Picture 1: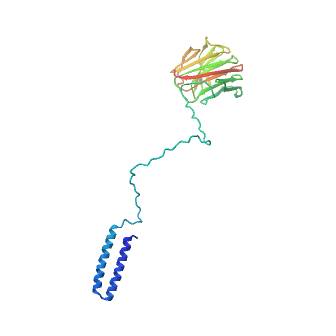
Picture 2: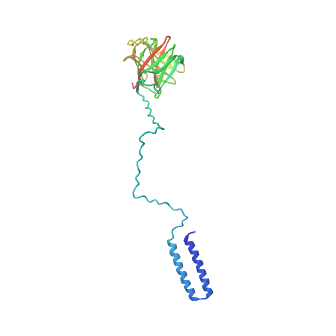
Picture 3: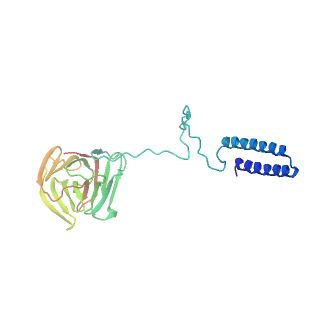
Length: 279
């Protein structure tokens, strides 16, 4: 209940008492004075009513007047040292579509698969900035593919050194997908083959074969190149084009490298680098 309403009840009650008292005594002058007093009280009550604010039990909006000057915030200072319980880790570099892998450490973005042979007959590791294929069994065909990207037209270069048995093959592949891949084999004896592997048939389909005249046979180092561009598949050895064939069965896929043993071992081949580039 607000103050105006209380005051109004109190005023009416007081006037009633006074008028009743005046009637009991019968004084006309007193009645006149009381009437005048009542008028004064009513005027006072009216003036008070005009000054009283809104009822206090009603919610009032907060003062939304904007401050004349924006408060100044103190800048937050970074800690001078990294907390010991939350060590920071360097962010991993993003995989690149075209780059040279020099095998200074085991590559995270490459995956190996054993196409033929026993899993106990090979070891694959990096050592002194080379990738080592160490094969110790018959017909061990070990493949390594670059995972992050699918290529249509691409060039792959690699340098390999033979340190073991001469009866082996170094292979570069392109357009590897769930249907198969193209592969370019160069045997240490000087022979080469260009295949299309068919996954559904589990079969290597020969596209061309022959001999490499400029291959350094035996325990030596050779540079290998393949270019897969459109329907054209090209093999190069030590900077010289060996053969180009055409095939349109596969249009895109991953790239990779392989080393294979045949009927004699051990085979020990070190890969110095692999470069993936545009043709």
